Length: 147
Image (cartoon, rainbow, N blue to C red):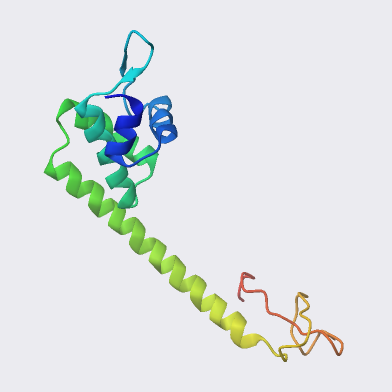
């Protein structure tokens, strides 16, 4: 199949296929006499695997690491489970980070001491030690280290 046919079958663009090839994610296909790429069903399977893994949150560099095992037929259930467990742990850590960030945002939101029509001043300090003037309000810096 040519590049357009592979793109349609795998639901990716021809540019994506060329990028995968350039990055070594898929092997360079044989060329026809006219210079056109000639892809195999194996290319299609690999592109579908890459897209599926991306959907599960795996980066192209993570995917690149397992492709040789796939090609050699040594990527079994134990390896799949290990990769999935690692990805779930990374997602759990990211969720914890996001929850912490959300908490900081909520604290910042609750520290706003102005009406909707007042301008905001981003000065460090507290209301007790900073004069903000009639048209400005102090906003606590959310990412400032706490004492």
